[in-house]
Amino acid sequence: MKYFTPQLYAESNDLDDSRVMAAMKKWDVGLARYRAHLKRIERHLPPSLREFMSSICLHDAEVIGPVVTRHPMVPGHHEVVFVTCNQMPIDGSPKGQVVFLRYLVVNQPIQDRPLDAKVFATHPHPVLWLYEELDVIKPGLFLQEILLSDGRVVRIEFKDFSYHVATPLPLSNGSAKRRLASTGKTLSNR
Amino acid sequence: MTIHEALLGVDGKVFKGAALTDVAAAARRKVGQDVVVCGDDIMLNQQAARAIENQVGPAVIHGGHVRAGPYALPHWQQKTPPPTGHCFFETDKRKAFDQP
View 1: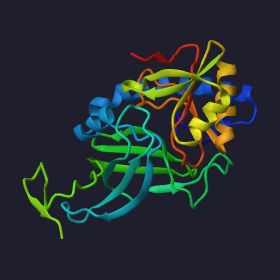
View 2: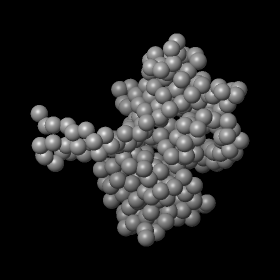
View 3: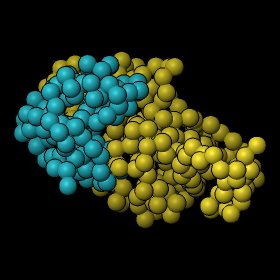
């Protein structure tokens, strides 16, 4: 991470309020620099990733993953998958929205904990997605780094990206049959 | 400095509602509702927000996220939710909005 580092996150959470304020100023500077960086690289990113960046905020989402699986469509390749569920969105999106992220990877992602600090939550609590950074390694190869609430930084090098958004099913109204609006299929109560 | 109920809007907007005491704010936070601390002194706002959130449990502060929207406010929240929700605070550059 270059902008939203574990070290700066820990400094922001110091017990001394004046240190908190100093770190928050550094954070704002980093945020402005990262925004400028994103503007520079945006046109080089896959369309799906550009769309994702303009529509989804995963900050504070509970995370399952990363997990690795064989890619269902690209022989000999693997994908890294995250499943996220955001119960406390800060961008006005609906609570409980589930997002599946899939990265077509070239190498195994790297996970480490570069900083051992009390600010990072330990298991068994749910892990939250805190901040992420994107970069272009070379044309057609991209890098995402993700800071999680347990202090892990996940580093993923990938060639392509896709995501799917799902919303929780509402409670049934008790009718004998339910219709899935998007497919026209009917589910019968058993 | 004042403390208010908070509602989230698009682009990270935080709308301030009814005024609260710090005790009422902590009670609201304990049930996962949002709160915002308003005023011109960012240090006081930050300290008040931290104090409210610490009454609920161990808390962490989160600075801005690039996708949160241009109006998003920094906030304290629970280190390990639940309860969910945030205790936002105004800065010198970013303020909460009056409810429409």
